Length: 257
Ligand SMILES: Nc1ncnc2c1ncn2[C@@H]1O[C@H](COP(=O)(O)OP(=O)(O)O)[C@@H](O)[C@H]1O
Ligand SMILES: [Mg+2]
Image 1 (cartoon, helix red, strand yellow):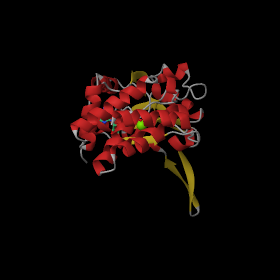
Image 2: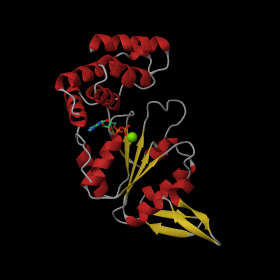
Image 3: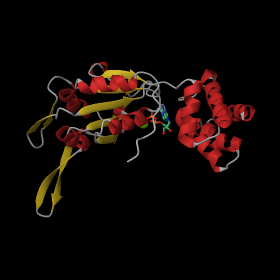
Image 4: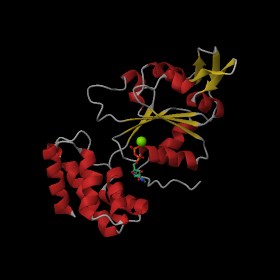
């Protein structure tokens, strides 16, 4: 498989390598679309490690991560979940949006994230020490969880943590060009527009424009869809359902491109 494209922003690569070498768990914080998942894929590929990704949501339970018994003919057989596989094989377990998952996964995380580095499976009575090359990586979006899904401080303190933010204009332009093959002039305009929208805090957006949305707009433009229309459907519409805010965003778009 081709190495996933990832533009290094800061010290994240070195930090990741040190965290891995020292068998610590890593938490990556940051708003959606800032390259967290891409970074983890890139690191896994670079280090030649298998990656088990779990996109956590409200229904994700410890059973989903650890495993379950299933009925096969006349027998019941145990099937390892992604966490158990990663622990046995020495892979990277990547829990995307970990705060979304059910609280019962935290119990499983505890014994894995401290000196024990052990997984207990109560259903089978098994205790599995993690392979030396096992690594736990989680991501969490502190922004939109305001008020409801927070990661408990006691859980947060188990991880070495890294913050991802939107890249500066020059870097983001480079990402757009590399990722989409977009013309430099278009990429620059999109990035400038993105920066403007990020500055407009009075729009009251729950989440502002991410690199992902700019990439989507660049892809549509490259494919031949008119520029403003591309931005309206790839940037304005995904950001809000509120009519006034949508109008304001579309105005800003037509002034920018
Ligand atoms: N540093 C980066 N290098 C390469 N691509 C990036 C980078 N940051 C963001 N992207 C682009 O933004 C998109 C969204 O990134 P992703 O990793 O899915 O975000 P997150 O997991 O933080 O929500 C990627 O598909 C990629 O096109
Ligand atoms: Mg992601």
